[in-house]
Length: 307
Image 1 (cartoon, rainbow, N blue to C red):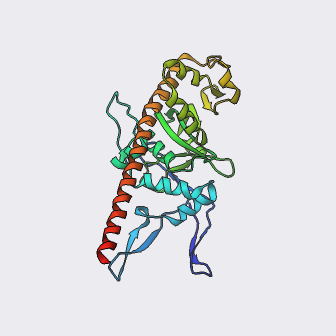
Image 2 (cartoon, rainbow, N blue to C red):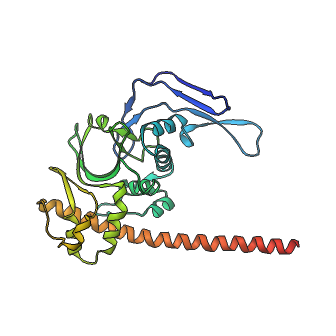
Image 3 (cartoon, rainbow, N blue to C red):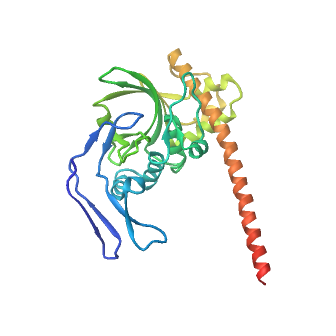
């Protein structure tokens, strides 16, 4: 459980939060991993309604949890961005499973517009809201095995490493402040078997390589760039500088045929998704330019009329 929380103000009159937590609470929740972890309790905030002189109490889960924000900043690099990205998914995006034999990967723009998606959609939306050079973070494809029922399911999850080296998984569809979960807590209930890991800071590099790919052989060549991290996991560590002058098909390791096929399919779907994402970003930028020009034109016409 969590001990006393003191909420006060500093000398400048700003909110000051003092957290005294010696133990943490974990519980089952959510639709994606069914596992939840609360490092701090929920708090209630008083929010003033515009145009009303009275104040009404609104539960913080709908807006901000300042204790959770502080915990993110104290625990992770770029914790402020992690908090904001997690909050936008946990409370604005609805989990929507796909139909059987369907596996369509939405772009971050599509997920933000539709306000729903599944595991990989939440992961890519989270990725898009963090700095491109974010360290100690990665996207992981793999399998999750429930230790009690032995049920196995494919999954994509976002993984963080805190300032002390402890690993966390991010399950965005929590609807609670409990979706950033220490790996050691998750291991009590489930085992995760990674297949492919892409560090956050390397996603853009891999994507650019995939966008340039024009045949199956290039896909297989990119797979050969993966580094085996253990018996069941491969990681993309970046394109070697001297490898551009060498044949790509000279693999330094032997990957099981089944795993090569699974990673090939991941690369193929990544390429399709990021091709659409690039087009959508250009369309959105063009739309914003046109909208800004219209606004400027209206302002200019208004000024001329007043002269």
